[in-house]
Length: 415
Image 1 (cartoon, rainbow, N blue to C red):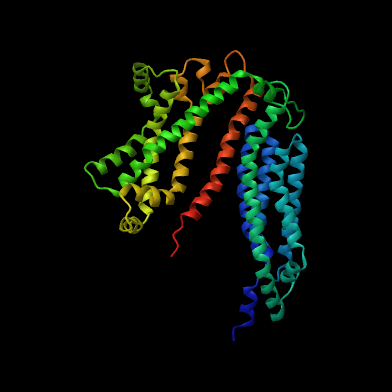
Image 2: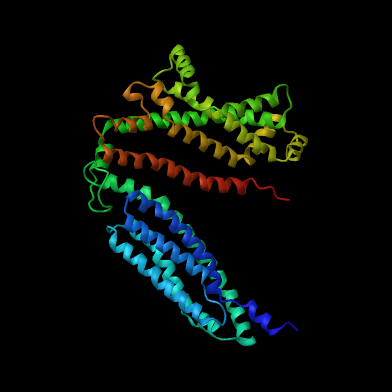
């Protein structure tokens, strides 16, 4: 029979186990958040933040142990210190959602640790020797609580990254909805729709939108027409120059686009394609084609050749095998390739700025850049236009997400 002392050593309350991990994460986050105090140049806040990080590290080092009530009391004292430092820092800072969020990373761990370390399970475990039946109950309790703690920790971590992602979006939305063209001010202090009204009622935005749609859709369609058969040919056929061609595709992607800017301009000028949709479509297709071919070639490689052989035995020619067997199974890859081509053309700025010199041929990126000049900065109009430009991309992602799921389900091989 296993010794009773060993059995008791197996048991540690789930709260202590969770705090061992959570306090490390909280300390790392607070050390990273000290960057904001440093950038503000506030030495007092920086010192308080450092003391908070030290207190979190000490709490992690001096978590309660079995039959050691003095260490538990020290842990409770450190929790009170952490909470006090966080509240004091919050009082010293100007009131804002961002400052509250920063200090919650100091206050919340202290409150959670104080609540957990003062509950009955930890108090009994740290103050006296438990019976075997109490240890068994504690182990059973741990099995239930640890799953909840892992779930809670995962959600808190994900929520933290969601907040980081939403901060610039909330900021740009606030600028778009605030009167005037100032970048400063508190979030949500005033609202106005003047910027959206000015953009939507103006003629320039709709011209830029039309140009971007024509160029992006044209780039996607022409890119797919070329990339799909090219990817299938590289995947299924062995021919002279196949491997060097694939290597050349990769080699082209290694060089920045600005290197080919001057040759592109000279070619477009010679062909008379400056200030035209066709010129941008051709330029974008050439730029995005190597990656599109590689993406489709990799997916075509995963389609079993046995399916094509079975279709051939059923009387299909090569074109029918491709269109009726391979292509339907490849819809997810085609969707991703089309999305990549569309976004590459939608967001491209340098080529559109170089090839188009007339305002009525500007695409959306070039048009947005024209709002910010050396003589004046229409930040409110720029923010409103930026939000309007991002909406089609967001809707496109939502649409393609559903399409990809349906394509994967329809392309499944049942056997």
